[in-house]
Length: 424
Image 1 (tube, one colour):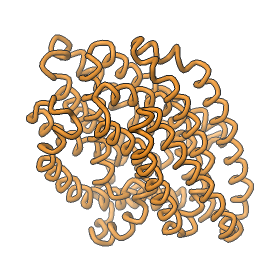
Image 2: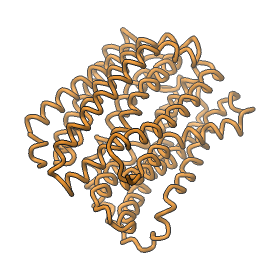
Image 3: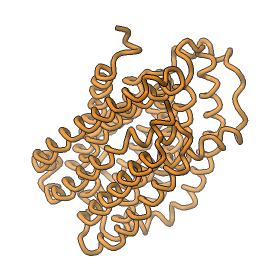
């Protein structure tokens, strides 16, 4: 059996192990933060992490989905130079969109300070974090390229484990300064710069042929293709982002910390979902293009795998939720109900994974985007009503309602449009 083309179950196992490496390291970072910073300051750092990740996501305008869709569909014997053609095209557009986003970050920072950080953050450190947006985008684009070229485990390590490792290294180097005078904020930015630079290492096998690759596509042409895919990339994070931002707006930094820890723990199941995504999606794309006769059987096999794995993980995490929260500190046990609600929300969303892929493959992205937008709208409206009355539990309930609406509508339209039948 070739390791670059293993069975679905075998590759999922490899992906899950790689994903768990990132999960463990990210939890270690979060535990260090919660055990060494006051709750309000931990909330500020978690909010900054959420902002950097969110702004970077918007600035990528769907480029990571575009790279995966284009490169993963290429024949297996395709030259590395042709793969690099798409990466170079992505670089050009990314440079422009990231620069604009970093500039907007600098302009908006004086607004972020009172609205999201209770006026407690040093403005200079908030400005510095704009560099984090730039280098985090480099990490994600390289991860997407590795995923598209079927280097699944490496892709997951670059996306999840690498930023955590560089954060741990940065904390270790600057440990005497970490908890003093908000130094943890610039330490976080340094860790992202380091992660972006190191991510170049994983592209080492393509470097010898980079000069042989065709010239890149026009920037406008790439934007037209990537932009419709942006909501697919953004939705999962937009839900968390909306919840975190609205918790910051309507509640206090302490509540942001509690919610963020619960959300991070709930994303353990999302990490499994991401491992399944990284394993299933490139294969579906290739089968759709190269061997459509086997697509239907693989689709239902993959769907069953998603349901079984996510259900087992969700049940286990609900059972052990309180002891895990206690690791962060006794204060965070208050978020146990929030964690349970978010875990169920992640499970419900996970059921739509393979169905959503078919919308993209069948060029029905507009329908999927409408459904994603409606679910996000439900989330925001529910947050406005539920957070003032139920606090962070209300934010979690809003996510659950939105995910129920999304999954139900995706499966309904999948059936109505007969997407799997049309793909054969």
